[in-house]
Amino acid sequence: MSRTGKLTLKIFLAIFLNDFIDGIAQVFMKKGLVETFDLPFTFQKLIFFIIHNAASPFVWTGIFLYAINFFLWIGILSQVDLGLAVPIGSAVYLMVPAFAVLWLHEKMNFFKCVGIFLIIAGIVLLSQSKSSKPRMAEIP
Image (cartoon, rainbow, N blue to C red; front, side, top):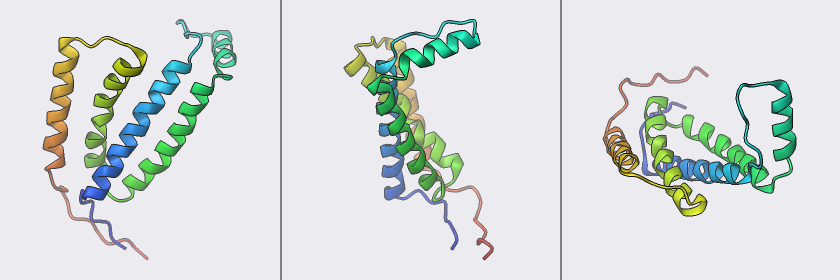
């Protein structure tokens, strides 16, 4: 079976779903963190951080969503070029600020909005590109 590396609507929607799950997972992780991890790094601080956050259902939900995200992502990568999937997968950079404003009540400023607009423009341009090289058939 040969892979075309072509971006289809099905793959584009899978990448979008992957980004959505990633964004929600990050919100759950952030919401679930009870203690902050101060620098400089020490082993004792790491253990304290893990113990205090391991009981959080939000953290565990985030971990579960990251696991789903991982398996969806490897499915996506088996179908499309990495150089195309990763930039299109950057839509998570749009979703996370929106989710953070909605659910974590974080603030948005002008420069963040301009940056998000530039990311959208880049995603649109990259989604219009084609694979740069033909694929070879897999060896049986």
